[in-house]
Image (cartoon, rainbow over the protein chains, first blue to last red):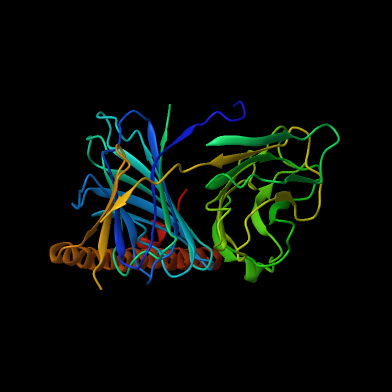
Length: 164
Length: 177
Length: 76
């Protein structure tokens, strides 16, 4: 790739300020890219679950399997739930963590949507989840939510489009 | 994502691969490495930031084709750098390289620095690995240099490559209440 | 303290900060409870599987017969 040629297009971003934010929604997402990448870096006022809801869907339409290493053991499991959550060791908490979501073929109406979600928290765990959202609708909004407390000021949420 | 710089190790090999004077104009960095070293001994790669040897910690998950495991930097006694994964040497299948992808969010900011690492290698033996590591450099300084080397200071083999990319989030837009 | 939601319009770039309604707060609390149930259940399953595998391995080493449940944990 020649120097300076972009492959990720920045779509939107938000840096948390104050102490009341529990939800950040990216709406009116264009369907012209192939994949989306959402990078969340920061912390929360308490330890809780960070996750995504796609197109405001809170139904049990998210199927997953995961692997996790918490520093003493490796584990793996699978099931379904009502959002894209890190249901293992690397929950968002009061220390810095990185939560990266890759949403493949997000606008393809022929596919259920595959999401690769990775959480890295050096004092807790490294977790890797793969989710399938069982809808063929194009993803037009992504709601990032913490299920307790609030996102700490300085936490960043950045959404990128990846072109084919 | 934009390419900042890339390098390929020449015939003489290299003890380390360093990126210095990293521009501070991006939001995140990602470093992609393909590496092999010239020793017959097994070894792993390490990352050091801004030339420092302190304030590192990490927690990893590893699978080698027959078992899985997880451990921490303090348990294995490695605190002067961040482990990026195993690097294949001359005892591994020829022409095979280990691959690493490191993601460093908000590298120019004033918080402690996260390093997310994914590493894979496959060489048709029982010593191949998948490796995920959650790393932390507990230092609020902006990252201006990154150095990759082997833990035992073996030489990187010819054709090892490393590419540093910058990711820019763009402007945030107006906020209304 | 009132919790808020942020809505970032990717088309226009405009970001709104909106106070959560009581219903939205209740929904988050319910989702948290569900997530906790899910996590605890999955971790219990993972721990049970790990225990079965450890038992299976110990029995194999000792030359003892495995239960069907233990045998099912082996991947050949």
